[in-house]
Length: 175
Image (cartoon, rainbow, N blue to C red; front, side):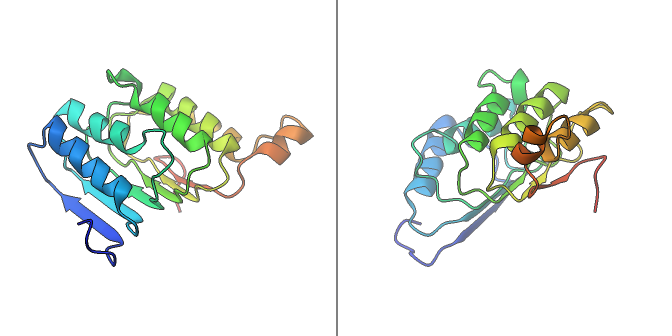
């Protein structure tokens, strides 16, 4: 993979039985690759810890991640309920304004507390343009959380600080 300088997209579908060493090696290769900007792991991590481990490994804080699109639908990500607390890590990552423009977390196991963490990060993030987070375990109260992240009208300063550019697809906000 590292020798192919033209590779810009990597799509993996139902790759099962990845162990921690496989995840670490793949994540390292993604980080080192000079032109890879779009990565998708579709239904790859059915073991609860594996998806969390991959997301944790990808979002490490060494700032060399060149991804513009990351898609991890149906991977049993457990958000704040995982040992790695991937939602807190994801929130911290998004708050740094990485290159990431699209993030797909469709059909994982994120809940209301995870939505709050992600929404708070979106308030300061100006690079993410599309977040797809439908089919997670989020209740009706989350609608207001997403709205405030995009447009908080509680004061003039909060209106200016709101993320007006990110489109959020949820169970409640659809096209």
